[in-house]
Amino acid sequence: METFRDLYDRLVRASFNKRLEAEVQLIKSEEGYNEEVLDRFLHPEKHPLICKESCEGCPNEESPACEVACLFSAIKRDEEGKVVIDQKDCTGCGRCVEVCRNNRLIERKDLIPILELLNTKSAPVYAMIAPAFNGQFTLDVTAGKLRSAFKCLGFYGMLEVAMFADILTLKEALEFDRTIHDDKDFMLTSCCCPIWVAMIKKIYHDLIPHMPPSVSPMVACGRAIKKIHPEAVTVFIGPCIAKKAEAKEPDISDAVDYVLTFQEIKELFDLAEIDFSKLPEDLRDHSSMAGRLYARTGGVSEAVQRTLDRLNPDRKIKLKATQANGAIECKRLLKDIADGNIKANFMEGMGCVGGCVGGPKAIIPYKEGTGHVNEYAELARYKSPIDNPHVIELLNRLGFATITDFLEGDNLFIRKFE
Image (cartoon, rainbow, N blue to C red; front, side, top):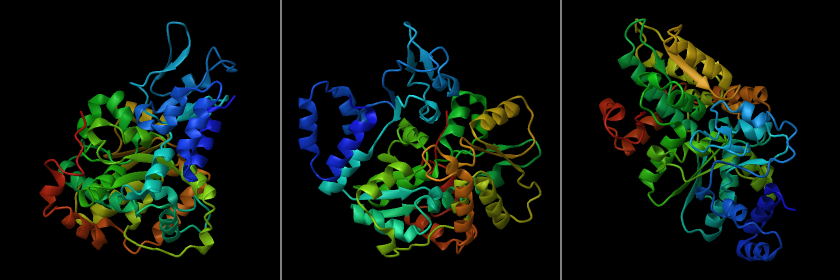
């Protein structure tokens, strides 16, 4: 009997070879064909973030690992005692997928509809690569070669989301400068990790007033592309499953059409037999050190600190940062803050140990990924968004003439948390 994975691999190969319709008809003619499972891969937008097959045979049936691992209590028992996923509480973090010993859980897969778009060329499709990419696809895969690889697959272009991390760094530094004025004030960064944001929204709702109204770099990138090219289809690629959930949140669902993981895109590179050593360097060096550091724990704090020092070097109240490294530490830090145990004025939370480089769909270990992120950051021509002329140029192109325009009103980079 075909598993989720078997069917998915079969459909991906068929779509890549431009024979998806024939393969679908063949599958429908086979004994035991499951229409719902097939539809999950063909139309992922209609289905939940995490799906499961039968849990029969789970070695921990009384206390399954997935139920224990879920920090949001989204895995529950129904009236018959069977394990179910409550989609209302699920954040798509992927912890349950990681710990499932039977491989009966699978995250939403967007690759097949993307391949169909690339095959038909019905719209320009842009790849948006997360700052954690460096070193993930072997050491010789530079940003320039990666851009060439995406174009070989049929993508119209590739943008580094680190450029938009630069923009959000500038925004959060400006927010800090205008709101933190004494030792009792503090700010929770809101622009990076969807697990951190989900914890605040779902569990520590009273802390929302301390979050600056900022979208994530992923959303900023998607919105900017669509502002300049309204017909574009945007695809985010990173190591995080939870970004699939973030992209579908109602107030920001206009930005990103599809989300792929590093592992998914590597499978596509392998299927296409792309030889990176033979690809040209299509290099566009637009991001600063600050934006590139977002990929690892402490990077957001360091980026905002560096930018704040450039904005207001004589500021009396200095930024004092603390970081939560992994979901358990995030929950502990937020509880401390809620209890009044506040030891810093800038709090950064990363739902994965190591930060984005420790995401569930990263290809290399997080410590190795951290080293590559730091190396790539050191290569940056600019040290902060203030020094990066591409940031100012893009903001002007998007219609931001003043700092007030940037920080207030209803614009591409503002998100109102409720």
